[in-house]
Length: 348
Image (cartoon, rainbow, N blue to C red; front, side, top):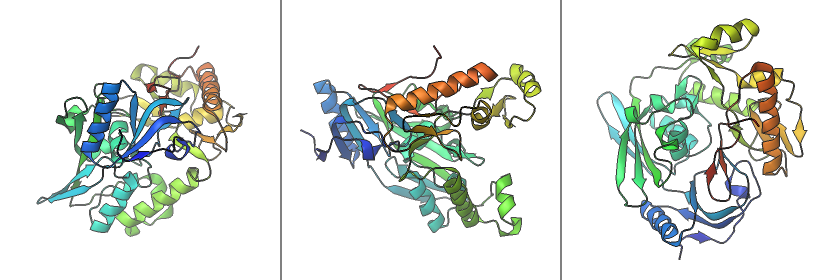
């Protein structure tokens, strides 16, 4: 019934948290046609399905009763214009592979997003960002496909509703659609995005796209756990954004809190700092722990199960809510036996 079907049902190697859960079936797809065929067979048989890339931003909270479809639809199309390059990148391409590819081609501008795990599809859905750059800054459009009628829809950048780790693809186009390609615009005139930590290690006269890429790779390797040694999904929580009305209050109470002013006048504050100051960073539940070098990252030290990770996350949330009156929102997606589900959005 399913072409390219794999009979290994364990998802342990297909999610970066290394959670040892199973699925009814696991299928790799390498073409849009295969993706549509499998999804439509799931529809007709009333079988739940979920589409993953690298499984780098998810936590399976229990065994999945449906089919896990692994997107391996790859390809990069390049169009040259007078002042910029246009890249049409299929959603199964790994993000960091794209960054390295553009550097080899002499297309500069993606280097600040070096070493971010995941594929292009999840990059668009999540609006990935780091070191002064977000996907929305370079995205031109996102192509999605209706899995019911096979119609391809191009969503222009201004309609994608990109915001901090969010987009329209997490909402209106979450069910019944799949991201199949992302359009990226890279200016030929390179303007480096400089951040403070970069200048600490590199002389400003030595800064070029390659030194930025290498420096960010070094920073991330030092700060974040090795996925081959500690299962994790990157930042488990979002950095909270405080409205204009509450800025003075929070800053007067906590003078040293790291914060960053946003365009709309709100401030983004460091969730890692909140976790550290809440004295929960040394708590461990089974093999679920908080990573010592980056408090926003929860790790599976070896055999952690979903309940242990969720229990640790709830302890963190409750502690910060009690001390700072701030509810940390999860950044990752939770998947139960039937699909994505909202968890940890309320404290009971």
